[in-house]
Length: 217
Image 1 (cartoon, rainbow, N blue to C red):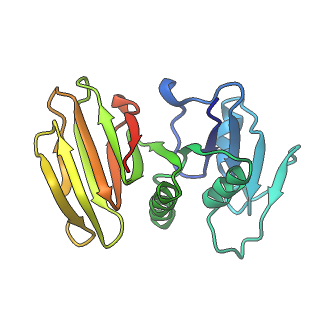
Image 2 (tube, rainbow, N blue to C red):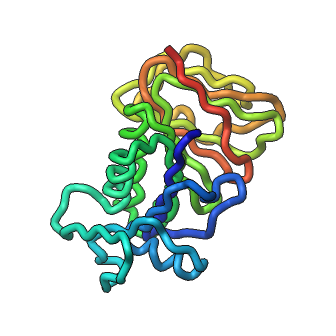
C-alpha cells in the first residue's frame, strides 16, 4: 500500500478537496502555522513541527518537534525531510501558496527537489495544483478544462512533448530563460505533458483533480 503524507503549512489554506484528503493510515503533519488551520477543522496532526514563529506560541502536542529559527530550510521542507525518514514517497502539500512570496518560491524549489528524488508531490491551494516531473509524464483525461502552464526547472529540459492541448510541442527544448509553456489550454481531448531529460513544473486548475503520473526511462 502506498504511504501518503499530508503536510499543512502556514500559507493560505482552503481545506482538503475530496480527491486529496487525508485518510486512515496517512501521515498528517502540521508545519508551524498550519496547526491553526487543522485545529479549526477539528483535526489533530500526527506530528507538529517548526520554529513556531507563525504561531507565536509552542503548543502542547504528543509528537512535537521544535526547530531553531536559525535554520537553512523552511518548516515545509523540514516536514518533508521528517516524512522521508519515515519512508514516505507520496506527498500532498497544503498551505504552501499565498502569504509570503519567498516561501511560495521555496515550495516550488521543493517540488523540483522532490521530483528529482523520484518522489510524487502535489502542491495544492488557491484553486490550483502544481507538481514537478523529472523524466516523466502526466496524463489528463478528456474532461479536463481550463488553463495549464509548464515551466522549465533548471537550465534546460529536453524532449518536451505537449499533446492534446491547444498549443502542442513535439520533442522541444525548454529553458529557464523563456516561459514558452505558459497559458496553454485543455481542448476536451486526452492530453499529456512529458519530458525525457530534465524537470518541468506543471500547474493547472484544481477542479481537474490529479492526473495519472508515469516515469520515463
